[in-house]
Amino acid sequence: MANIFIRFISIFFIILASVSAENSSTLMYEIKLVGLEEFPEIEAASKTLSQLINPDSDFSPGSEGILRDILQDDINHITDYLKSYGFHDVLIFPEIDTSAAPNYKIVIHVDSGERYTINRIKVFVNGKKFPIPTEILAARKNAPVINELILKDKNTIALYLKQKGYAFVDTLDELVTINHAALFANITYSYTTGPKGKFGAYTIAGLKNVKQDYVEKFIRWKAGDTYNIDHINETESLLKETGLFESVLITPANPTEANEFPLNINLTEGKPKHLQFNLYGNIALSSSETNRYEIGIIPKFTHNNIAGANEKFEINTILSNIVQDLNIFIKKPHFIFFNTNGRLFFSGERRTYEAYSRLGIDGGLGLEYNITKNIEINLGLLYEKYSLERQTDLKKNSYDFFGTPFNLRIDSREDKIFSDFGTQIEATWTPFFNSENTLQSFSIKGSIYLPIINNGLILASWARWSALYGISFDESPMDKRLYLGGSQDLRGYNKNSIGNMDPLHNNPEKFVPRGGLSSIAIGIEPRFKIYGSLWAACFLEGGQISEEENVFKGIHKFSDLYWDGGVSIFYFMGFGPLRIDIAYPLGDLLPEDKKEFKFYISFGQAF
Image (cartoon, rainbow, N blue to C red; front, side):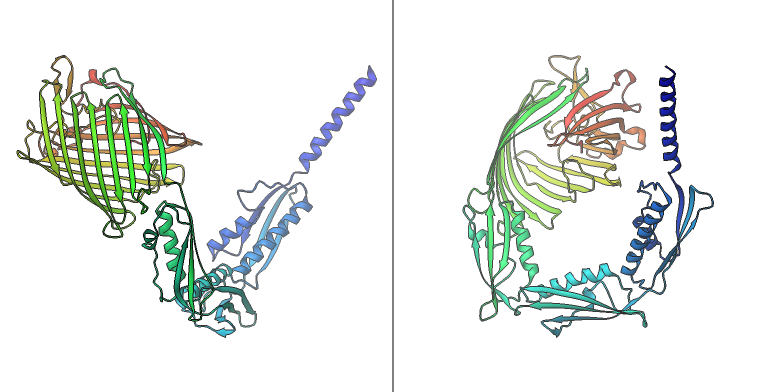
């Protein structure tokens, strides 16, 4: 028994001794870099190259020998970096204070010396000196010798040659000659090329369903023009943007005797037909809501090349408990002008809202003109024929209107589903007229998204003003009136509940919204990432509606607006974010006994 006890004690002390030895071998150190204070950006970059200084490094030396080896590696890396930035006489030496070991104090002293500058830049093409505009170069005479800029210019010069008629350019080398006595460098670039030439004939391969004359609309060069790689790159980009091709590759062939480069345009077509089913929904978990939910599906068939020139044909159906729509849409790209699209549409619809029901058909045509990638103008002509039944008095009215909508849209967002940067502004003016009335509908809405912390915090905000002119409130069709409240604007209130209410004919104790002729609404929503695919937001929204044409007449202070606040949770599910909103009315315009929390479950962002 005693032997066992002695062995146990021996093993315990051996383990304790090994742990103590391990702890004693862990070194602590303090380190700093001095001598580069004159160049703060270079100093910061040098620190990131050091395994001992870099704050993101978790290196822990186990012995003084390891510490010194890593320190020498750091010095070598910093030396190479400084030489690449023109400090070719740099001297670096460490100072190590071991008096308080295992707590070491280290100072890396840097004597950068004089910074070398560029004395001369020469370019040789096929063994002969070639003039290059200095303004295209990143490295300039009398500027510091920076290797990164020298390598960048090597590619810039090759591109310049391809822009000036040389289809085949091979880069031989860049030679940097250092003169230590004069503290400067001479740079020589060398290239070989074939003959300088022009664009020649082209051949298009790979077409099956797309017409060749449609592809030819995107070719950015003409036969006989001086060869320029930019025209090829632009043509490839435009063809890819049509969405018709899985791959686009344009390559020059060997020049003819007339020094013309034939072009081979190789295309691989994608599938033009698509069938998809979209699910959408919005649920308000509120006891005071009549239409507490809307859930539906949108079957959609699309053919993106119905006649061989990227004509888009789409037919979709919206089927929900509130809306039943059939929509047919045809779009003709590059109609009349290259940046103009023509469209033709038809729809039949049946909608059952709390205040009224609508049954009708409408159709029309229009033109879309893309001023830039982010700016679009729409002009159109539409016709509507429908009947309305008001639930307040069960009165039925039939309407037919011609309309000439004008729309201006500015959209710089990259991600339309959950925007993290950019601005969206949309202004719409639509005159409606028939034998009895002429109405004018105006709307301006905008939203902005600002990244405060990259991929972590987004400040989103929105505003909207709308008005209906040319008709009295009592004579205005209920579907043309404006409404506020619900999941798309003021989330603390029932859908369309802002403003005056009328009792239902069959249930006088139940009230439905009257709507208005003008409205204003604003909102702000900071969004922040919680973890992975989970985001959250808090929001504040305000708005007002009026039965007169000028909503601002009744607004004199902030308390004249309906306000609400709340929080949102976003969970990304691949096809878009599932959103849960919790909102509560604020202010005094809604009586306290009418206030309650509103809960919404929906897909996408509120604005």
